[in-house]
Image (cartoon, rainbow, N blue to C red; front, side, top):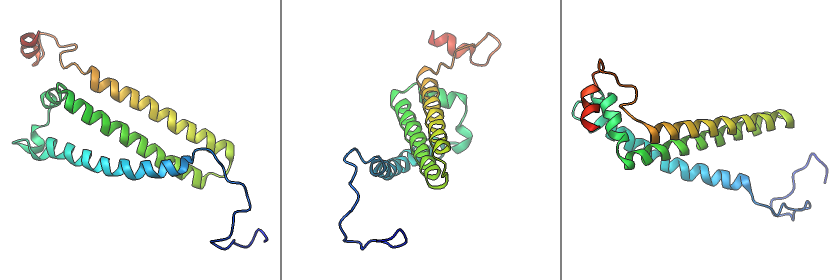
Length: 152
């Protein structure tokens, strides 16, 4: 068979198969599973933040966010959404780079940059969620002064 012909669909493989982990398959599975989970997480996020509050979107302010981040449930909800969205997006970008960048060195460099940026953003986002302190840096002139003093 020449390089211009396509083998019959049921023809035996002439090249040896890779016996290692099939990362492309697991990337594909991850995209489907994380996509479904992200739909639930995002619509839950929108429902709680925009639909259920009495004043709708106008209820969103610093105090609203501080109240949500005081609950471990909402911290983990937002962190899970952050992690899944970043990894989902990075995997999609990796697929695009693999499809359209033909130079192997450039392709590997771009994929490495994508994963490094994602790792940094996940670490920073996770730190923000779990170390959020609404009273950090509040002075006597701040509108939060009384609330922070009452909680101290």
